[in-house]
Image (cartoon, rainbow, N blue to C red; front, side, top):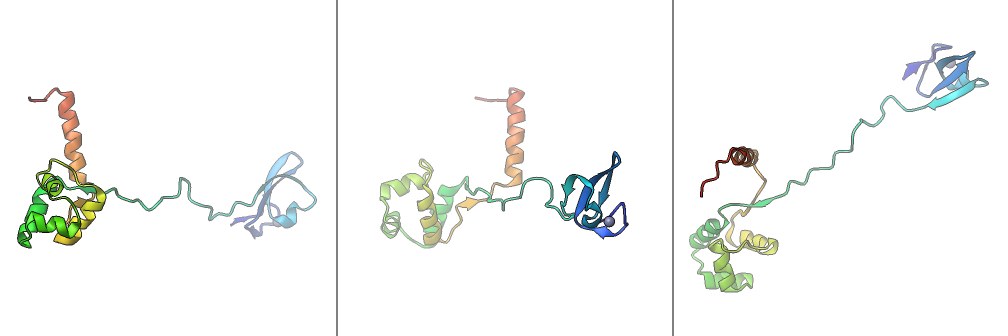
Length: 147
Ligand SMILES: [Zn+2]
């Protein structure tokens, strides 16, 4: 909302008109019969600059100790690997490899494991983690690789 520069009335619809070489911001009523340079009917409550923020879908990551968590969950429920394999309709050998962290479980299996064992295998990437990752990178540039 701004005031018309001719009649002083507040107006939402602003026209920029050319009055004897001078640009005036006026209301539609005053713009009538004048040379309209441009239509500035952009409302004051225009969309905020910048892109519309999409609800950030934080990518969940497999926890570092997923094998240990699976084992702990399995042990707390006293489920032998063979039974767990049957429950999840998975190969026992495959589950063993996952529990030994030789193989990262596919997402579908992660969901099944979480549900069956009542554990959490996914986490949002922690700020701390990226912090240490950053530090790790810095260290790397300093040539701190050992082994
Ligand atoms: Zn006016």
